[in-house]
Length: 76
Image 1 (cartoon, helix red, strand yellow):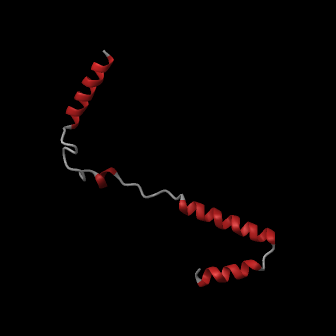
Image 2: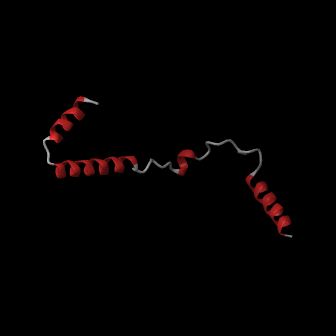
Image 3: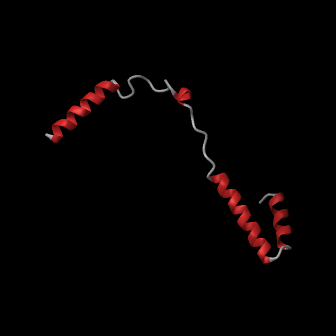
């Protein structure tokens, strides 16, 4: 533990049990907020063009047409 954490722990020992529980709850709440803080989201313009074309060797419209035809054959 760091020196600051040890110092805070020494100070917390002088608190009543209720005050210690309140402090613990407040610290847990703060830690949860930091842990669940939204991650930075990328803007579309930042990532646009990052993947090579065509991504998996097939044009997007060709893939859509092929998969629609395949699913049409399965339904028939």
